[in-house]
Amino acid sequence: MTVLRVGVLGFGGLGQAAARMLALKQQMSLVVAGDSQGYAYNPAGLDWQSLQQAVREQGSVGFAEQGTLCADPIATLLECGLAVDGYFLALPNLPNTFMASVARQFIKAGWRGVLVDAIKRTSAVEQMLTLQADFKQAGITYITGCGATPGLLTAAAVLAAQSYSEVHSVRITFGVGIANWEHYRATVREDIAHLAGFDVERARALSDAEVAALLDETDGLLKLEDMEHADDILLELAGICDRERVTVGGVVDTRNPRKPLSTNVQVTGRTFEGKISTHTFTLGDETSMAANVCGPAFAYLKAGIELYRRGCYGLWSSADLMPRFVR
Ligand code: NAD
Image (cartoon, rainbow, N blue to C red; front, side, top):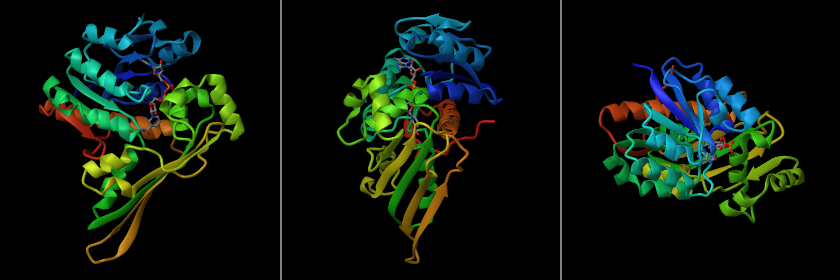
């Protein structure tokens, strides 16, 4: 396999971790990185440390050596026709329609290739579903929900379901530990949007000081239950179970990189002999959110590129395909 040319759009917590992860890969090379103020492009590969330094010291990858500052980086890099096999969209989905609007931007620009996202909400995935025919016509292979949840855990639930004749429940419980909420502003705001009294727009409108004040009240912990998470619709569409049988919740500690609890998915069902049983898949506590999101995202990107090269265009999800390990 030739080295796949990969772009990462959004260079916050996940985007930076993604770039660092790619530096260890032989089969993929980071050629584009973009954020809200600019982008950097180098067909021979970008250095993640210089990108990170540009973000840390000047606020954007546009300040890096191969960088360009511009008002609408996604539109600009699409106009430039950069040679890229696929992008990981590590962008905030704020507002809740943002990722779908980015997908439409790619379609409108006549871009061809592979896109993966790590969006989380059921309503966000529903917007992607309306673009199925447009992706197909445009020659884009789009895989949605490729993070940890939805993503890694959804795919694990699909595998686990195979022991059963009927799946009764899928329970996803995540524990996330991050040292500082400011490393993952969008992730934390999108999680706050699930708390009682909030929605996406209210969480988006919070200033950084207001987020910090809210976290002060809870000792940095966000406890989330019965979240609107797209694992439900993805498992339903994949034919595993009705969406009502899927529940997602967890705890995010924004002041400690140690996980407050072990992330796991429990899949309960009845076997063909009539036995009720539960499979549990638990992630190692040492694996970070970044490892569990970016690894699957690139693995689905590789799977997408294989599909794309076989002429398969349209929309798939993490519950439809096996991720392909990237060496
Ligand atoms: P962040 O806030 O740390 O960074 C966001 C980045 O996007 C920044 O670099 C910002 O400049 C850039 N950006 C914003 N608007 C842009 C635009 N119009 N054009 C180009 N770049 C733009 O974000 P994060 O905490 O890394 O989260 C990214 C996304 O990943 C969130 O939507 C989050 O919910 C999702 N996520 C998914 C999972 C999962 O398991 N599925 C887990 C964690 C995070």
